[in-house]
Amino acid sequence: MANDIDLQDLRVAVTGGTSGLGLALVRLLTGRGARVAFVARGAQTVRHIAGATGAVGIVGDVGNKHDTYPVAMQITGNLGGLDALINNASALGPTPLALLADTQCEELEQALAVNLIGPFRLTKALFGALAASAGAGRGAVVINISSDAAVNAYSCWGAYGASKAALRHMTAIWAEEAKMERISFLSLDPGDMDTPLHALAIPDADPTTLKRPDRAAMEIVTALLAALPNYAVRAVAEQQ
Ligand SMILES: NC(=O)c1ccc[n+]([C@@H]2O[C@H](COP(=O)([O-])OP(=O)(O)OC[C@H]3O[C@@H](n4cnc5c(N)ncnc54)[C@H](OP(=O)(O)O)[C@@H]3O)[C@@H](O)[C@H]2O)c1
Image (cartoon, rainbow, N blue to C red):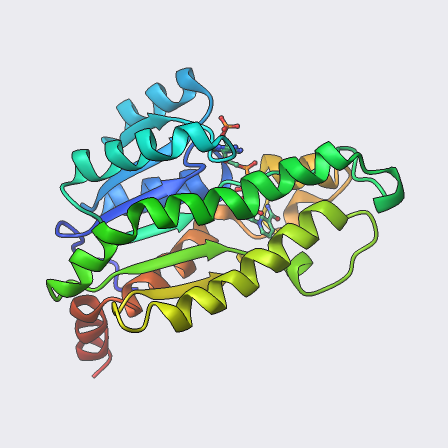
């Protein structure tokens, strides 16, 4: 992505915008002028990040169905529509990570609620706004943040891995079904990053071997812009 690219016309919603990759996305996008709304559960941190970045901070739990429409309405109301949704918030399942035989049913349900059903509900609630953006020629894209645990059967990652695998497959089906509305759906694995989630999962990992969330955010935003006609044309022009 070009360093001087101006994103003033872009309206983006990011779930899980107060830490790790989500926070890096909020900072990168607002830094380039985009209008951004983000969601997280911790009210105090949401207020702090909103104040520091100029993004719209929304307190909500993507795993709670009662939050879906209030969150969606705050997103579209504050941004005046929506061009891109990044479903980034995630739950690990049991911590310390556990074998499936030692995973409580409720822990699996919680991972599915946050990592699969939550993105499904929010996408449905925002589908009309995204279709309107696509119909107006602005393009529209949904990015679901995936993981290598969606494709590899890592021992002790059962709840998280199963939820991410289901999200990845659902993204592929959304992509087929939303062709008519010209909404793009992408499943992107950011790689192993130095974030609180990674530290919770693998406390003894050496952070110097992990990707910086800023770098992963740059890769995600590059893919996001490539899926939007106005920016994709500009990116090709810049390469020539
Ligand atoms: N870190 C890695 O190595 C890695 C590798 C592959 C994929 N990923 C994926 O990358 C994404 C970001 O991970 P990360 O490492 O940046 O995580 P993180 O540092 O733990 O940040 C998670 C963010 O999501 C919010 N959140 C968590 N549960 C939520 C819920 N139920 N509702 C709303 N917000 C919620 C958190 O704020 P609150 O707690 O205040 O809600 C926080 O802002 C995830 O989808 C993860 O699966 C990460």
